[in-house]
Image (cartoon, rainbow, N blue to C red):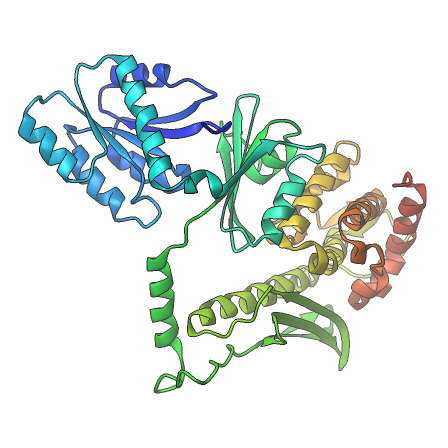
Length: 461
Protein backbone atom coordinates (compact mmCIF):
# COMPACT_ATOMS: atom_id res chain seq x y z
CA UNK A 1 0.00 0.00 0.00
CA UNK A 2 1.06 3.58 -0.61
CA UNK A 3 2.19 5.74 2.28
CA UNK A 4 -0.63 8.16 1.41
CA UNK A 5 -4.19 7.38 2.53
CA UNK A 6 -6.41 5.57 0.03
CA UNK A 7 -9.46 7.69 -0.77
CA UNK A 8 -12.79 5.93 -0.16
CA UNK A 9 -16.31 7.34 -0.57
CA UNK A 10 -19.17 5.73 1.38
CA UNK A 11 -22.81 6.32 0.36
CA UNK A 12 -25.66 4.97 2.48
CA UNK A 13 -28.87 6.59 3.73
CA UNK A 14 -28.39 4.86 7.11
CA UNK A 15 -26.22 7.09 9.31
CA UNK A 16 -25.31 4.16 11.59
CA UNK A 17 -23.93 2.19 8.64
CA UNK A 18 -21.88 5.19 7.50
CA UNK A 19 -20.43 5.69 10.98
CA UNK A 20 -19.60 1.97 11.29
CA UNK A 21 -17.69 1.95 7.98
CA UNK A 22 -15.87 5.19 8.82
CA UNK A 23 -14.68 3.66 12.11
CA UNK A 24 -13.49 0.52 10.31
CA UNK A 25 -11.44 2.48 7.76
CA UNK A 26 -9.12 4.58 9.96
CA UNK A 27 -6.20 6.78 8.95
CA UNK A 28 -3.49 6.82 7.94
CA UNK A 29 -4.38 3.90 5.67
CA UNK A 30 -7.72 5.35 4.56
CA UNK A 31 -9.32 8.76 4.02
CA UNK A 32 -13.12 8.46 4.07
CA UNK A 33 -15.89 10.75 2.84
CA UNK A 34 -19.47 9.66 3.61
CA UNK A 35 -22.79 10.85 2.17
CA UNK A 36 -26.39 10.01 3.00
CA UNK A 37 -27.64 11.08 -0.43
CA UNK A 38 -25.94 10.06 -3.71
CA UNK A 39 -26.84 13.43 -5.22
CA UNK A 40 -24.67 15.17 -2.65
CA UNK A 41 -21.79 12.85 -3.51
CA UNK A 42 -22.04 13.64 -7.23
CA UNK A 43 -21.13 17.24 -6.56
CA UNK A 44 -17.91 16.27 -4.78
CA UNK A 45 -16.55 13.22 -6.58
CA UNK A 46 -14.39 15.05 -9.14
CA UNK A 47 -12.83 17.03 -6.31
CA UNK A 48 -12.26 13.98 -4.07
CA UNK A 49 -11.12 11.69 -6.91
CA UNK A 50 -11.92 8.49 -4.96
CA UNK A 51 -10.02 5.27 -5.41
CA UNK A 52 -13.04 3.19 -4.36
CA UNK A 53 -16.76 3.77 -3.73
CA UNK A 54 -18.84 1.77 -1.23
CA UNK A 55 -22.52 2.27 -2.09
CA UNK A 56 -25.87 1.03 -0.84
CA UNK A 57 -28.23 -0.27 -3.52
CA UNK A 58 -31.63 0.70 -2.09
CA UNK A 59 -31.88 4.42 -1.24
CA UNK A 60 -34.96 6.69 -1.36
CA UNK A 61 -33.94 9.62 -3.57
CA UNK A 62 -31.52 7.94 -6.01
CA UNK A 63 -30.81 4.22 -5.91
CA UNK A 64 -27.30 2.84 -6.08
CA UNK A 65 -27.59 1.50 -9.63
CA UNK A 66 -28.65 4.89 -11.01
CA UNK A 67 -25.81 6.57 -9.14
CA UNK A 68 -23.42 3.95 -10.54
CA UNK A 69 -24.52 4.69 -14.12
CA UNK A 70 -24.08 8.44 -13.67
CA UNK A 71 -20.57 8.03 -12.24
CA UNK A 72 -19.50 5.70 -15.04
CA UNK A 73 -20.36 8.37 -17.63
CA UNK A 74 -17.46 10.47 -16.37
CA UNK A 75 -14.15 9.95 -18.17
CA UNK A 76 -12.26 10.70 -14.93
CA UNK A 77 -14.39 8.41 -12.72
CA UNK A 78 -15.44 5.53 -14.93
CA UNK A 79 -12.64 3.23 -13.70
CA UNK A 80 -13.31 3.81 -9.99
CA UNK A 81 -14.25 0.42 -8.44
CA UNK A 82 -17.63 -0.04 -6.72
CA UNK A 83 -18.47 -2.29 -3.78
CA UNK A 84 -22.25 -2.46 -3.36
CA UNK A 85 -24.13 -3.06 -0.11
CA UNK A 86 -27.67 -4.43 0.02
CA UNK A 87 -30.14 -6.00 2.42
CA UNK A 88 -31.66 -7.94 -0.50
CA UNK A 89 -30.28 -11.47 -0.60
CA UNK A 90 -31.68 -12.52 -3.98
CA UNK A 91 -29.14 -14.25 -6.21
CA UNK A 92 -30.69 -12.49 -9.21
CA UNK A 93 -30.14 -9.14 -7.49
CA UNK A 94 -26.48 -9.94 -6.89
CA UNK A 95 -25.90 -11.22 -10.42
CA UNK A 96 -27.58 -8.17 -11.99
CA UNK A 97 -25.47 -5.82 -9.91
CA UNK A 98 -22.21 -7.56 -10.78
CA UNK A 99 -23.16 -7.82 -14.45
CA UNK A 100 -23.76 -4.09 -14.49
CA UNK A 101 -20.07 -3.56 -13.67
CA UNK A 102 -19.80 -3.63 -9.87
CA UNK A 103 -16.53 -5.02 -8.53
CA UNK A 104 -18.01 -6.71 -5.46
CA UNK A 105 -21.25 -7.16 -3.52
CA UNK A 106 -21.72 -7.42 0.26
CA UNK A 107 -24.99 -8.46 1.91
CA UNK A 108 -26.42 -6.61 4.89
CA UNK A 109 -26.00 -7.21 7.76
CA UNK A 110 -22.27 -7.65 7.20
CA UNK A 111 -19.28 -8.30 9.40
CA UNK A 112 -17.19 -5.08 9.43
CA UNK A 113 -13.85 -6.90 9.13
CA UNK A 114 -15.12 -8.82 6.12
CA UNK A 115 -16.08 -5.58 4.38
CA UNK A 116 -12.66 -4.07 5.09
CA UNK A 117 -10.99 -7.18 3.67
CA UNK A 118 -13.06 -6.85 0.50
CA UNK A 119 -12.14 -3.18 0.19
CA UNK A 120 -8.43 -3.94 0.51
CA UNK A 121 -8.70 -6.84 -1.92
CA UNK A 122 -10.57 -4.71 -4.48
CA UNK A 123 -7.91 -1.98 -4.29
CA UNK A 124 -5.15 -4.58 -4.78
CA UNK A 125 -7.02 -6.10 -7.71
CA UNK A 126 -7.40 -2.71 -9.40
CA UNK A 127 -3.72 -1.94 -8.86
CA UNK A 128 -2.74 -5.25 -10.46
CA UNK A 129 -5.23 -4.79 -13.29
CA UNK A 130 -3.70 -1.43 -14.16
CA UNK A 131 -0.21 -2.86 -14.01
CA UNK A 132 0.59 -0.56 -11.13
CA UNK A 133 -0.32 2.50 -13.19
CA UNK A 134 -2.01 4.14 -10.24
CA UNK A 135 1.24 4.19 -8.35
CA UNK A 136 3.66 4.59 -11.24
CA UNK A 137 1.73 7.74 -12.17
CA UNK A 138 2.26 9.21 -8.73
CA UNK A 139 5.18 10.37 -6.59
CA UNK A 140 5.11 10.23 -2.81
CA UNK A 141 7.47 11.26 -0.07
CA UNK A 142 8.14 13.54 2.89
CA UNK A 143 8.15 17.33 2.58
CA UNK A 144 11.64 18.81 2.51
CA UNK A 145 12.94 21.96 4.15
CA UNK A 146 11.25 24.17 1.56
CA UNK A 147 7.78 22.78 2.26
CA UNK A 148 5.31 22.62 -0.61
CA UNK A 149 6.85 25.44 -2.66
CA UNK A 150 9.53 23.35 -4.46
CA UNK A 151 6.87 20.73 -5.21
CA UNK A 152 4.68 23.34 -6.89
CA UNK A 153 7.62 24.41 -9.05
CA UNK A 154 8.28 20.79 -10.00
CA UNK A 155 4.61 20.35 -10.97
CA UNK A 156 4.66 23.49 -13.10
CA UNK A 157 7.99 22.67 -14.78
CA UNK A 158 6.67 19.17 -15.53
CA UNK A 159 3.46 20.62 -17.06
CA UNK A 160 1.52 18.43 -14.66
CA UNK A 161 -2.15 17.75 -15.23
CA UNK A 162 -3.13 16.35 -11.89
CA UNK A 163 -3.00 17.05 -8.18
CA UNK A 164 -0.38 17.87 -5.57
CA UNK A 165 -1.66 16.66 -2.21
CA UNK A 166 -0.09 17.17 1.23
CA UNK A 167 -1.23 15.52 4.46
CA UNK A 168 -0.07 16.63 7.89
CA UNK A 169 -1.34 16.95 11.45
CA UNK A 170 -4.91 15.98 10.64
CA UNK A 171 -5.22 18.27 7.63
CA UNK A 172 -5.25 17.52 3.94
CA UNK A 173 -4.47 20.23 1.36
CA UNK A 174 -4.18 20.06 -2.39
CA UNK A 175 -3.57 22.05 -5.57
CA UNK A 176 -5.00 21.00 -8.92
CA UNK A 177 -3.04 21.80 -12.07
CA UNK A 178 -3.75 21.58 -15.78
CA UNK A 179 -0.74 21.67 -18.09
CA UNK A 180 1.32 23.08 -15.22
CA UNK A 181 -1.13 25.90 -14.49
CA UNK A 182 -2.94 26.18 -11.17
CA UNK A 183 -6.67 25.73 -11.71
CA UNK A 184 -7.84 25.28 -8.12
CA UNK A 185 -6.92 24.52 -4.54
CA UNK A 186 -8.75 23.03 -1.61
CA UNK A 187 -8.40 21.25 1.66
CA UNK A 188 -9.96 19.59 4.65
CA UNK A 189 -10.89 20.67 7.17
CA UNK A 190 -11.90 24.00 5.68
CA UNK A 191 -10.64 27.06 7.55
CA UNK A 192 -12.78 30.18 7.40
CA UNK A 193 -10.96 33.18 6.01
CA UNK A 194 -7.89 31.19 4.93
CA UNK A 195 -7.12 30.81 1.22
CA UNK A 196 -6.62 27.09 0.33
CA UNK A 197 -3.35 27.76 -1.50
CA UNK A 198 -2.03 29.74 1.47
CA UNK A 199 -2.96 26.85 3.75
CA UNK A 200 -1.03 24.45 1.52
CA UNK A 201 2.05 26.67 1.50
CA UNK A 202 1.94 27.01 5.29
CA UNK A 203 2.52 23.27 5.83
CA UNK A 204 6.16 22.66 6.70
CA UNK A 205 6.13 18.96 7.52
CA UNK A 206 4.09 16.05 6.26
CA UNK A 207 3.73 13.63 3.38
CA UNK A 208 3.02 14.58 -0.21
CA UNK A 209 1.62 12.82 -3.21
CA UNK A 210 1.77 14.09 -6.80
CA UNK A 211 -0.79 12.39 -9.04
CA UNK A 212 -0.85 12.49 -12.83
CA UNK A 213 -4.40 12.87 -14.10
CA UNK A 214 -5.50 10.71 -16.97
CA UNK A 215 -6.15 12.68 -20.17
CA UNK A 216 -9.83 13.13 -20.98
CA UNK A 217 -10.41 11.95 -24.54
CA UNK A 218 -13.99 13.24 -24.46
CA UNK A 219 -12.84 16.74 -23.52
CA UNK A 220 -10.30 16.68 -26.34
CA UNK A 221 -13.01 15.72 -28.84
CA UNK A 222 -15.20 18.60 -27.58
CA UNK A 223 -12.28 21.02 -27.93
CA UNK A 224 -11.67 19.85 -31.50
CA UNK A 225 -15.34 20.33 -32.39
CA UNK A 226 -15.42 23.83 -30.90
CA UNK A 227 -12.20 24.76 -32.69
CA UNK A 228 -13.68 23.70 -36.04
CA UNK A 229 -16.85 25.71 -35.40
CA UNK A 230 -14.90 28.84 -34.45
CA UNK A 231 -12.58 28.83 -37.45
CA UNK A 232 -13.12 31.66 -39.91
CA UNK A 233 -12.18 29.58 -42.97
CA UNK A 234 -15.19 28.19 -44.83
CA UNK A 235 -13.48 24.83 -45.31
CA UNK A 236 -10.93 22.92 -43.24
CA UNK A 237 -7.30 23.51 -44.13
CA UNK A 238 -5.57 20.66 -45.97
CA UNK A 239 -3.76 18.23 -43.73
CA UNK A 240 -0.43 19.36 -45.17
CA UNK A 241 -0.97 22.96 -44.02
CA UNK A 242 -0.23 24.20 -40.49
CA UNK A 243 -3.32 25.87 -38.95
CA UNK A 244 -2.85 29.57 -38.33
CA UNK A 245 -2.51 30.73 -34.74
CA UNK A 246 -5.40 32.82 -33.38
CA UNK A 247 -5.19 36.58 -33.91
CA UNK A 248 -3.71 38.85 -31.28
CA UNK A 249 -5.29 41.34 -28.87
CA UNK A 250 -5.05 45.13 -28.64
CA UNK A 251 -6.33 47.31 -25.81
CA UNK A 252 -6.03 51.03 -25.14
CA UNK A 253 -6.26 52.46 -21.62
CA UNK A 254 -6.10 56.00 -20.30
CA UNK A 255 -3.78 55.95 -17.29
CA UNK A 256 -3.75 59.28 -15.51
CA UNK A 257 -3.87 61.27 -18.72
CA UNK A 258 -1.51 58.99 -20.67
CA UNK A 259 -2.74 56.78 -23.51
CA UNK A 260 -1.29 53.29 -23.04
CA UNK A 261 -1.53 50.49 -25.60
CA UNK A 262 -1.27 46.79 -24.71
CA UNK A 263 -0.62 44.42 -27.62
CA UNK A 264 -0.50 40.63 -27.29
CA UNK A 265 0.14 37.96 -29.92
CA UNK A 266 1.31 34.37 -30.13
CA UNK A 267 3.79 32.73 -32.49
CA UNK A 268 5.74 29.50 -32.90
CA UNK A 269 9.50 30.15 -32.88
CA UNK A 270 9.79 27.13 -32.60
CA UNK A 271 8.12 27.00 -29.16
CA UNK A 272 4.71 28.58 -28.76
CA UNK A 273 5.45 32.02 -27.29
CA UNK A 274 2.99 34.69 -26.14
CA UNK A 275 4.37 38.25 -26.24
CA UNK A 276 2.74 41.32 -24.70
CA UNK A 277 4.14 44.80 -25.16
CA UNK A 278 3.09 47.92 -23.24
CA UNK A 279 3.46 51.11 -25.30
CA UNK A 280 3.12 54.75 -24.26
CA UNK A 281 3.67 57.61 -26.71
CA UNK A 282 5.11 55.21 -29.28
CA UNK A 283 7.74 53.93 -26.82
CA UNK A 284 7.78 50.31 -25.67
CA UNK A 285 7.84 50.39 -21.88
CA UNK A 286 7.52 46.70 -21.12
CA UNK A 287 7.79 43.44 -23.01
CA UNK A 288 6.38 40.29 -21.42
CA UNK A 289 6.94 36.82 -22.85
CA UNK A 290 5.87 33.35 -21.82
CA UNK A 291 6.69 30.17 -23.70
CA UNK A 292 5.46 26.59 -23.80
CA UNK A 293 7.81 23.66 -24.27
CA UNK A 294 6.51 22.91 -27.76
CA UNK A 295 4.78 24.52 -30.72
CA UNK A 296 0.99 24.60 -30.96
CA UNK A 297 0.53 23.53 -34.55
CA UNK A 298 -2.36 21.08 -34.54
CA UNK A 299 -6.00 21.98 -35.08
CA UNK A 300 -6.89 20.84 -31.57
CA UNK A 301 -4.28 23.27 -30.20
CA UNK A 302 -6.19 26.33 -31.41
CA UNK A 303 -8.36 26.69 -28.32
CA UNK A 304 -5.36 26.26 -26.04
CA UNK A 305 -3.40 28.90 -27.97
CA UNK A 306 -6.29 31.33 -27.79
CA UNK A 307 -6.73 30.80 -24.06
CA UNK A 308 -3.03 31.49 -23.42
CA UNK A 309 -3.12 34.70 -25.46
CA UNK A 310 -6.30 35.88 -23.73
CA UNK A 311 -5.07 34.98 -20.26
CA UNK A 312 -1.81 36.90 -20.53
CA UNK A 313 -3.41 39.90 -22.23
CA UNK A 314 -6.24 40.16 -19.69
CA UNK A 315 -3.84 39.83 -16.78
CA UNK A 316 -1.62 42.68 -18.01
CA UNK A 317 -4.62 44.88 -18.84
CA UNK A 318 -6.11 44.28 -15.38
CA UNK A 319 -2.78 45.15 -13.74
CA UNK A 320 -2.51 48.44 -15.62
CA UNK A 321 -6.16 49.31 -14.97
CA UNK A 322 -5.32 49.32 -11.25
CA UNK A 323 -3.53 52.61 -11.95
CA UNK A 324 -6.69 54.32 -13.17
CA UNK A 325 -7.98 54.82 -9.63
CA UNK A 326 -7.88 58.35 -8.30
CA UNK A 327 -4.45 59.36 -7.16
CA UNK A 328 -1.53 61.39 -8.32
CA UNK A 329 2.08 62.15 -7.70
CA UNK A 330 2.99 62.89 -4.15
CA UNK A 331 6.24 64.01 -2.62
CA UNK A 332 8.13 61.43 -0.62
CA UNK A 333 7.53 63.50 2.50
CA UNK A 334 3.73 63.32 2.16
CA UNK A 335 2.05 61.28 4.92
CA UNK A 336 -0.02 59.18 2.48
CA UNK A 337 0.80 57.18 -0.64
CA UNK A 338 -1.27 55.69 -3.47
CA UNK A 339 -1.89 52.01 -2.65
CA UNK A 340 -2.72 51.19 -6.28
CA UNK A 341 0.66 52.52 -7.40
CA UNK A 342 2.55 50.29 -4.96
CA UNK A 343 0.42 47.26 -5.84
CA UNK A 344 1.09 47.86 -9.52
CA UNK A 345 4.87 48.04 -8.90
CA UNK A 346 4.94 44.65 -7.16
CA UNK A 347 2.70 43.15 -9.87
CA UNK A 348 5.02 44.17 -12.70
CA UNK A 349 8.17 43.09 -10.86
CA UNK A 350 6.49 39.71 -10.32
CA UNK A 351 5.41 39.65 -13.97
CA UNK A 352 9.05 39.99 -14.99
CA UNK A 353 10.08 37.18 -12.64
CA UNK A 354 7.26 34.99 -13.98
CA UNK A 355 9.20 34.47 -17.21
CA UNK A 356 11.77 32.43 -15.26
CA UNK A 357 9.75 31.14 -12.31
CA UNK A 358 6.51 30.24 -14.03
CA UNK A 359 3.01 31.33 -13.03
CA UNK A 360 2.31 28.91 -10.17
CA UNK A 361 5.67 29.46 -8.53
CA UNK A 362 5.38 33.24 -8.82
CA UNK A 363 1.95 33.33 -7.14
CA UNK A 364 3.08 30.92 -4.43
CA UNK A 365 6.23 32.89 -3.67
CA UNK A 366 4.38 36.21 -3.64
CA UNK A 367 1.85 34.84 -1.17
CA UNK A 368 4.40 33.17 1.05
CA UNK A 369 6.60 36.26 1.40
CA UNK A 370 3.54 38.49 1.85
CA UNK A 371 2.14 36.35 4.63
CA UNK A 372 5.47 36.20 6.46
CA UNK A 373 6.19 39.92 6.29
CA UNK A 374 2.60 40.97 7.07
CA UNK A 375 3.06 39.62 10.59
CA UNK A 376 5.39 42.54 11.31
CA UNK A 377 4.36 45.05 8.63
CA UNK A 378 0.69 45.76 9.31
CA UNK A 379 0.23 47.92 6.21
CA UNK A 380 0.94 44.88 4.01
CA UNK A 381 -2.39 43.46 5.17
CA UNK A 382 -3.99 46.08 2.93
CA UNK A 383 -2.78 44.15 -0.14
CA UNK A 384 -3.83 40.81 -1.58
CA UNK A 385 -2.37 38.49 -4.20
CA UNK A 386 -4.92 37.23 -6.73
CA UNK A 387 -4.76 33.75 -8.24
CA UNK A 388 -3.25 35.15 -11.45
CA UNK A 389 -0.45 36.88 -9.50
CA UNK A 390 -1.79 40.43 -9.63
CA UNK A 391 -1.29 42.40 -6.44
CA UNK A 392 -4.16 44.73 -5.54
CA UNK A 393 -4.94 47.01 -2.60
CA UNK A 394 -8.13 46.64 -0.63
CA UNK A 395 -10.79 49.00 -2.04
CA UNK A 396 -10.71 51.02 1.19
CA UNK A 397 -6.91 51.31 1.12
CA UNK A 398 -6.32 53.56 -1.89
CA UNK A 399 -4.47 56.05 0.33
CA UNK A 400 -2.02 54.46 2.75
CA UNK A 401 0.43 55.86 5.29
CA UNK A 402 3.95 56.59 4.07
CA UNK A 403 5.18 53.50 5.95
CA UNK A 404 3.51 51.42 3.21
CA UNK A 405 6.29 52.41 0.80
CA UNK A 406 8.94 50.84 3.03
CA UNK A 407 6.75 47.79 3.70
CA UNK A 408 6.05 47.11 0.01
CA UNK A 409 9.71 47.80 -0.84
CA UNK A 410 10.78 45.20 1.72
CA UNK A 411 8.24 42.75 0.30
CA UNK A 412 9.55 43.37 -3.23
CA UNK A 413 13.18 42.91 -2.15
CA UNK A 414 12.37 39.73 -0.22
CA UNK A 415 10.41 38.28 -3.13
CA UNK A 416 13.27 38.98 -5.55
CA UNK A 417 15.86 37.50 -3.20
CA UNK A 418 13.95 34.23 -2.81
CA UNK A 419 13.01 34.12 -6.49
CA UNK A 420 16.65 34.72 -7.43
CA UNK A 421 17.69 31.75 -5.32
CA UNK A 422 15.42 29.57 -7.48
CA UNK A 423 16.01 31.12 -10.92
CA UNK A 424 19.35 32.69 -11.79
CA UNK A 425 17.87 35.06 -14.39
CA UNK A 426 15.76 36.75 -11.73
CA UNK A 427 18.87 37.90 -9.85
CA UNK A 428 19.67 40.45 -12.54
CA UNK A 429 16.14 41.86 -12.76
CA UNK A 430 16.12 45.66 -13.04
CA UNK A 431 13.26 47.07 -10.99
CA UNK A 432 13.31 50.48 -12.68
CA UNK A 433 13.10 48.87 -16.09
CA UNK A 434 10.23 46.60 -15.06
CA UNK A 435 8.26 49.57 -13.68
CA UNK A 436 9.34 52.22 -16.17
CA UNK A 437 5.80 53.20 -17.09
CA UNK A 438 5.30 54.78 -13.64
CA UNK A 439 8.94 55.44 -12.81
CA UNK A 440 8.44 59.14 -12.00
CA UNK A 441 5.60 58.43 -9.56
CA UNK A 442 7.52 55.62 -7.84
CA UNK A 443 10.62 57.79 -7.60
CA UNK A 444 8.62 60.61 -6.01
CA UNK A 445 7.12 58.17 -3.50
CA UNK A 446 10.61 56.99 -2.51
CA UNK A 447 9.96 53.42 -3.61
CA UNK A 448 13.28 52.77 -5.38
CA UNK A 449 15.33 54.17 -2.51
CA UNK A 450 13.36 52.01 -0.08
CA UNK A 451 13.97 48.88 -2.17
CA UNK A 452 17.70 49.58 -2.29
CA UNK A 453 17.75 50.09 1.49
CA UNK A 454 15.88 46.82 2.02
CA UNK A 455 18.29 44.95 -0.25
CA UNK A 456 21.31 46.39 1.60
CA UNK A 457 19.94 45.39 4.99
CA UNK A 458 18.94 41.89 3.92
CA UNK A 459 21.12 39.09 5.36
CA UNK A 460 23.44 37.42 2.83
CA UNK A 461 21.93 34.39 1.15
